[in-house]
Amino acid sequence: MFSMQPIGYVKSPFKNSQEIPKGLGVKHEAEGILEIKEELVAGLTDIEGFSHLFVLWAFDRSEGFQLLGTPPIDNRPHGVFATRSPRRPNPIGLTVVELLRRDGARLHVRGVDMLDGTPVLDIKPYLSSVSSEKLRRGWLAQAEARGGMNKLRGTAVAILLLGTLVCAALATAQTQKPAPVAPPNRMARMALIAPNNSRMTGVNTMRLINTAQAEYKHAHGKYAPWDELC
Ligand SMILES: C[S@@+](CC[C@H](N)C(=O)[O-])C[C@H]1O[C@@H](n2cnc3c(N)ncnc32)[C@H](O)[C@@H]1O
Image (tube, rainbow, N blue to C red; front, side, top):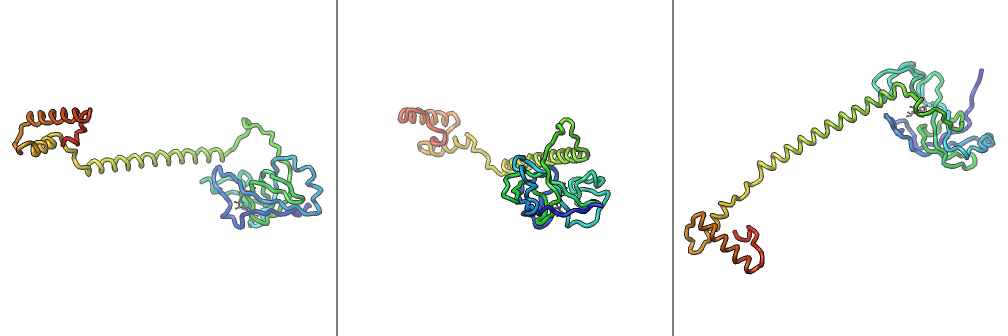
């Protein structure tokens, strides 16, 4: 028979489970401290040389276990030993943390996903020898792929919706836009301000415009913008 005692406790920013980031591909960046018992400090000798550590700890706030369960990141059930569920026959947690610095019995680390006060059972240097080509991620890879597809589908639907909205807005703007003033109307205005208020034919109007343009160019060295003539 064996028995275990904590070698220390986690100082974590998380006071309850809801505060801990969850979900597919979530990155644990929270910083915390592993406070190791004074009488065990000699066991930390030379630990500073390692960038990352395995931390084994106890799910001290979970009750009982469930052999088959549906993780929050999937919609299919999986065996407890194929998941990282807190509800396991031996409630042991495993977290890889980055060692930021050692301050005596305190290890400052990044990447905690444990609740504040979680008992630490063991610490080991992290050494991964499994090449990425050999690594298989089981149901998690499939859930991630499905998640990715759902995200893609979501993005496509969002783009379609946005496109529809933009088209609808443009169509509405078109119908509400006042009709552009057609040159004949301007000519009609020209006709109204013509000398003697005489009624003018289209040809006469064009002659008047040409004359006005010629005068404008003579005075300003360039042709007048249309609006200035009207
Ligand atoms: C999915 S588990 C993964 C933990 C660890 N990385 C592992 O793989 O064993 C992480 C969750 O465990 C829960 N948890 C953290 N500390 C706990 C504790 N001391 N007791 C019970 N549950 C805890 C939180 O809900 C947290 O979101």
